[in-house]
Length: 123
Image (cartoon, rainbow, N blue to C red; front, side, top):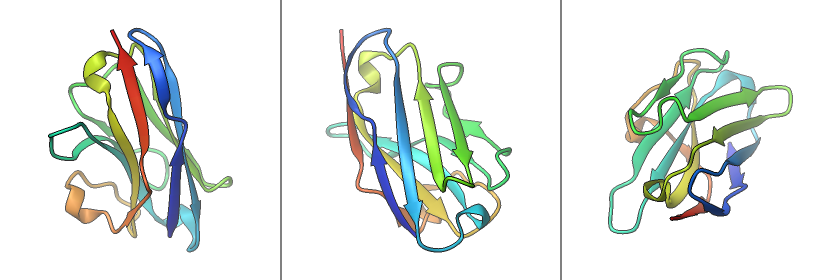
């Protein structure tokens, strides 16, 4: 699976962005996917994950209630809607996928990674 994330940019605190992840390669509907982020000087961390059927979602506490993960298997795409953005959300955001219908939390469970898209939230 090849993944390409896009949609990042500069936004003011309180604003919104929608990240997209376009997939190509093997059948998209048989994989689960997730969004991770890495801020400068910090380790990459989980943001949200979703199973192949669209359920089985999980959110990091820091984004719960503000971010929504979704996917469109027909379009081979995943999305991360980010609302009420905060400066601490500033990071490079990566989409990732694993060859399982079940979502998973550990970063190491994800075999395929996109190139990342930068989100900068100004105060």
